[in-house]
Amino acid sequence: MLVGVVSDSHDDVASVRKVAEFLHRSGVEAVVHLGDIIAPFTLRELAKGVGVPIEGVFGNNDCELELLLETARDVNARVSSWPRIIQLGGRRLLLMHGKGSAEVTVEVAHALAESGRFDGVLYGHTHREELSYVRGVLVLNPGPISSALGGPRLALLDTETMAAKLVRL
Image 1 (tube, one colour):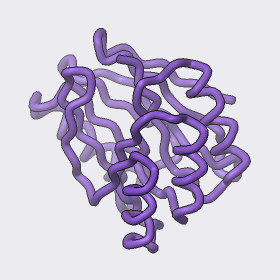
Image 2 (cartoon, one colour; image 1 turned 45 degrees about the horizontal axis):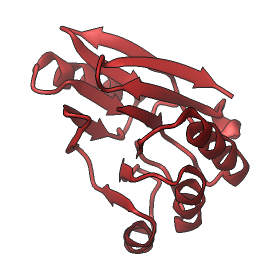
Image 3 (cartoon, one colour; image 1 turned 90 degrees about the horizontal axis):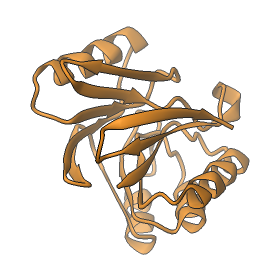
Image 4 (cartoon, one colour; image 1 turned 135 degrees about the vertical axis):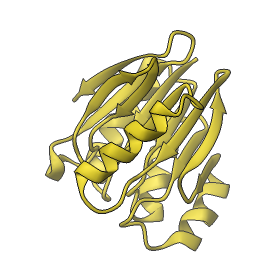
């Protein structure tokens, strides 16, 4: 299963549209958003563009949580607090955003991977890409969608092989 992995859109609708178009053309079967969607209209734009189910978590800047949940129900998306454990393509993935310093967020992501309880630990928040393996567990941060934060960036994840590719648009 090919999965698009995104994070930190921060209401940059132009970049969200670019990313959604790329993911649609890439043939992804699902999209994971790792937080800081910000406003419901951003989630709606992403969903409209990709046309596949979206799984996500809230970020530290997401403040309209009830409206995000309502929008998610309308657009074939599921968003909740983190950490969140999901099954995609037969793989057990832990989704998280992060909080506080980038260093602590990375340390937490790596510690979760070290546990060996997941096939992948996917996180956002730091606005920095990461594609690594800790004891055979994928640790992935796609970087930000928002162009103001260095994006648009995203990742493609093949759940069959657990290989990922970082993409900059």
